[in-house]
Amino acid sequence: MAILKPIEEPRNLHGRRRLEVYNPATLERTGEIEVSTAADVQAAVERARKAVEGWRALSFEERGKYMLRVRAALLDRAEELADTIVRDTGKARMEAMSNEILPGCDSLTYYAKKARRILRDEKKPLHMMKNKKLVVSYRPMGVIGIITPWNFPFILSLNPAVQAMMAGNTVVAKPSEVTPFVGIAVGQLFEAAGLPEGVYQVVTGDGTTGAALVEAGCDKISFTGSVRTGRKVAEACGRQLIPCTLELGGKDPMIVCEDADIERAANGAVFGAFANSGQICTSTERVYVHEKVADKFVTRVVELTKGLRQGLNSEGEVDVGAICFGPQLDVIERHMKDALDKGAKVLTGGRRNPKYKGNFYEPTVLTNVNHDMEIMREETFGPILPIMVVRDEEDALRLANDSTYGLNSNVWTRDKRKGKALANRIQSGCSTVNDCVINYGVAENPFGGVKDSGIGRVNGEMGLKSYCHVQGVLIDRFGTKSELFWYPYTAGKLRLVRRALNLLYRSPIGKLLGN
Ligand code: NAD
Image 1 (cartoon, helix red, strand yellow):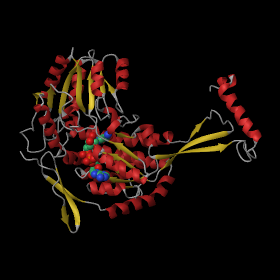
Image 2: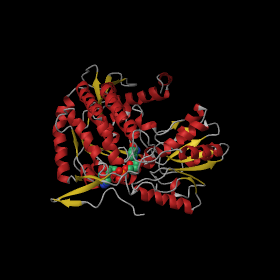
Image 3: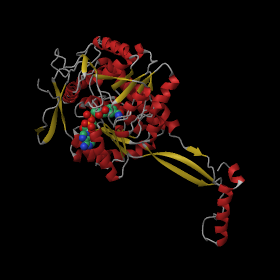
Image 4: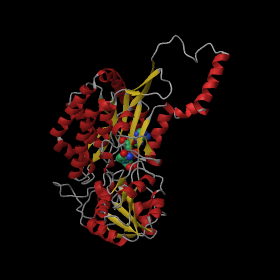
């Protein structure tokens, strides 16, 4: 069967490039967008630059009021927005509501209310120079370029923008060309809240528009997407010496210990692997289960998987939606073929769903897998759950860490202390014990990856502060006419420094001072 792509070759209408957009669940054409040129992007960044001064001058309360107005608009339009999300992505309506709109309301509320406390000046006691006072301030950076993917087009566009704006920055957003109407709808929400002109703008288009935004003179780029594009963004930012946050792909491992609650672990594995049709950066993409509980676990996972309802959206009665981006099906099928050629066994699923003409792949459970297979090494981003049986926890840890990725991970055991200790030994930016997938949605959690999964953190205190320049201001307390180390240098001062060195680091007094 031919691969049906949601976006056809770019079309050139009236001298401007346009892209067609398709509903991945039905393959119906839903419209087209204009590709913003480098000049358009430049103009947007200039408008954003002009808006910075007025926006940063507002108090946190005033900026927070705008965010709460966005929340009111979001609640008024929740159903209409869910329609747009479902049409652009093909995901289950429940997921549009619970994983996009609900966390959107939470993000707007949390940062509207907490930003002032998180970003207030911090007085830092000094361990040595008691004649000085240090105050650390968090200053807005200016214009933030936000580039986002198609898998959670609403929350991944809204959430970083709310953080950037609450910190006093203005934003130019470039949503994915695969799900542009959701990105446009986010812009309309800000418009409905009466935001001053230029504070939040959307530029539509493909990678050329994204690349133009990275080069347009922003003060920081917040990028969420693939490792491949992330590298390009990092290179371009490095060349310009501007910071970037990179939230990239994952190949999240799940470790099921001998003492796990198997019913909860099996439910967690099925949700972790098949929610959003496996298209979550923190999807469970590989399982390592202790040999003593493997049979019971696998049997229950297969039973639960067979019970999932896949299909077009209805009122909350569909569990697994479509594959949003048509070419992703190629990746899924390539990984599956490689796994089957190397001896993997399909326990359920293993093919496109023949009932639908849209992009549906059946929820699939695999065993007899190993690390020679792409399915255990590369991000599949589809509804595939490969399970590997291991001798013990050390074996599981070794395999979990045998990956270029390090976004999220999860450990399942009745011993929570052991779970935490195992989680700490997995090379991943986040982890969960007896839970999965939820990390991004926890506002306080500094979410992000290690290894190829990214650089920097989004959310909570660290995320919010990452949209600020940290400025340490050191204030002299006593106003003496000169300082010991200032001019003129004399032999006497040099002797004093030598004595101070001995006193501080080689004497009982130094020890008393904690040196
Ligand atoms: P992608 O990298 O193909 O595209 C992401 C965005 O970058 C799109 O808006 C695209 O138009 C733009 N882009 C493309 N080329 C560009 C360039 N040269 N310069 C600047 N921008 C450019 O990713 P995708 O396929 O849309 O998304 C799926 C990926 O996103 C998966 O790997 C997934 O794991 C990852 N993801 C990560 C997180 C996270 O928080 N870590 C969250 C969701 C998705």
